[in-house]
Every structure is written in structure tokens, then in C-alpha cells.
Length: 166
Image 1: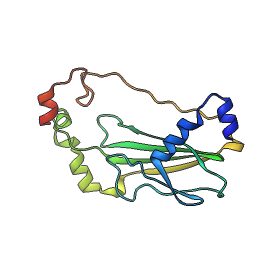
Image 2: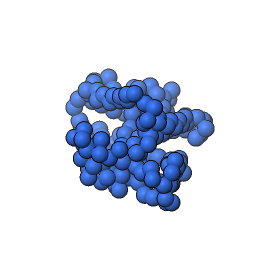
Image 3: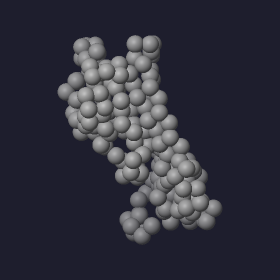
Image 4: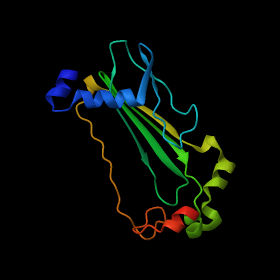
């Protein structure tokens, strides 16, 4: 409940601002995610159907996992916390073509080719609902990796002309 969240030291005003910025009510119990990430495909994100009109979104969080350099896809994830449950929706998207990665892997790692050959059917999607009254604990972890020399997408030194041209 909102009271328990406030007692835990979380500001409900901040949580409400996240929801207002990222979601909009379509009906009393149907919410649409309007905060799309730049590489999301049109119609890829489903509406969030709540169990009853009294259930309401409390928090929204969206993040991207770029995945390994050798993978052709990255994963976008949205998490919606409501008064009754946690909704998690993940979807894979093809990485944009980048000549910096082509230099390392050549034609074998061309996401443009993989996107043409496989198309959207290759992209995996998953959705999960976790009911709060039945859940004893919940934990999520996000790690931020430091820059490395062997990954052209996360070099420790930025070269503006290389970034612009490629």
C-alpha cells in the first residue's frame, strides 16, 4: 500500500512523477506505456491491464541491456509496480549497424543482415506478473560495466571523428 511505501522512506511524489511521465490511463483499469525507448518497434509494447479499478500504478522504470558485443540484439525492459503486483516486460531489439563493430567482426556480425534475414520473428519478448501479497521478497540487480579496449561500443577513450563518421 502507499502507506507502507511511505513508511519505508520512499517518496510517493517521486514515484507518481515517474508514472505520469511514462504512462497514461486509457480506461479505469487499462494503462498504456507512452515512454518508448528510441529503438522500440511500433505496437511492440502491450497495454497493462489491472485486476480492478482500485489497483493503480505506483512506479515505472525502463532500462536497456546492450548485451554482449557478439549478440545482434539488445534488450529493453519495462517494470511497472502497482498496488497489487509487479509487471515486467522485456523485448529484444536489433542493435543499429555500427561500422566500429563491423571492423572487429566483419560481415559475420552485421546486424543489418541479421535483421533482414530473420526479421521481427527472431526478436524475443517476455512478460511476467508477480503478485505482491504472495511474494516474500523481490530483488533485482543492474550492473554497469567499465569501459574496455576490446569493445568498440564502450571504449575508455572517445575519439570524436571516429564517433561521428562511424
